[in-house]
Amino acid sequence: MSRSSNQTIRLAALAAGLAAIAACAPPPPPPPPPPPPPPPPPAVVIPPRPTPPGGATNSMTIPMVAATGVRQTVNANLTPAQTTWNLRSALNVAALNCQAPKHAMLVDNYAKKLKVHARELSATNRALQSEFRQRYGATYRDVQDSYMTQVYNYFALPPAKDDFCDVAYEVSNEVVTVAPGDLEVFAASALPRIEAVFEDFFRAYEKYRVDLAAWDSQYGPPTVTTTVQGYTNPLDPNVEVEPGETLVGTMPATAPVTAPGEPQAPVDLPPASSQTPVVIATDETGADGEPVVTLPTEGPIFQSGEVVQGADNPGPDDTPDPQS
Image 1 (cartoon, one colour):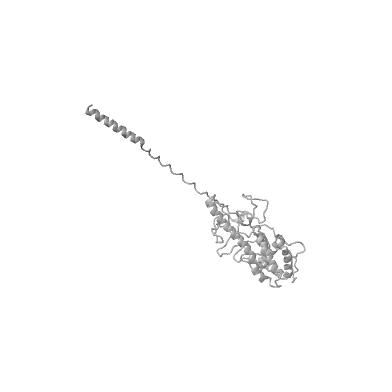
Image 2: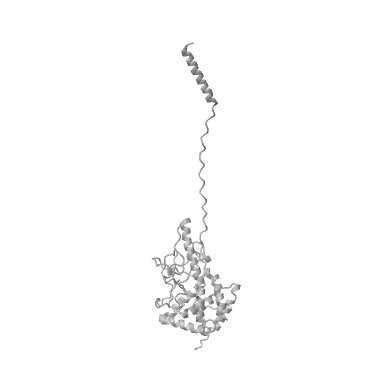
């Protein structure tokens, strides 16, 4: 056998051996599995959309806070006679509207107040009419009637009714113990307690508006801008109502607050007084299906005399004038 043949055989044997060794080697490991998909994003829990306090409508007009920090309600910038008479009006509204059993004594307390303080109330009524007459001349009664319409309806604001009735009941229990001649002094401290009920509601409503704007900016469409307005006290030295003009809710519309209770600056918006608002819920509903409830700017719902509870309870016009 030739040298060349031997070399060929050896190479073939070597190749066969290598093939056998390769056949016995373990297979290569499989490729690594693909990475798992990323976890789903955490579920977004959307809190409930804020709702107005006290069941109020979501577009309610509220009195503005002036730069002085005083909210311009019917009880702002009052004369002493107005303070006493507005307290009387508040208790009259409470006697008519607060019908819960726990408030049952309101009617009796109110009637007793009229009797015990008849002389002082008559004097207050004359003083109040004199103040309006001096400011507005022959047309004073129209201005006074328009103002008193707002006073009565302000105290009848439905969203504040429950708290108003509770505080008015407390005040009615106290007023029957006030000595004759001291009613004006009592009214100076009692009326702010009743007014605080409405201030609490207005601040809660302002907070609702701030919370609603924040919710809508994050979860929903932009909220509809609401306006605020103030009442004009026709006996305020800085206020003038033209003769024959009865509308006294004439403060301009203003920008929404950004924090509860802060003053609002006037902006170029239609005056809130052009909205023809009413105070008592009617059959009309807003876009959200809720009854239309807002503060009044006009309308002879109550005259400047009195709406009394039944025929047996005297009003100021029924009380004999000690000087007549």
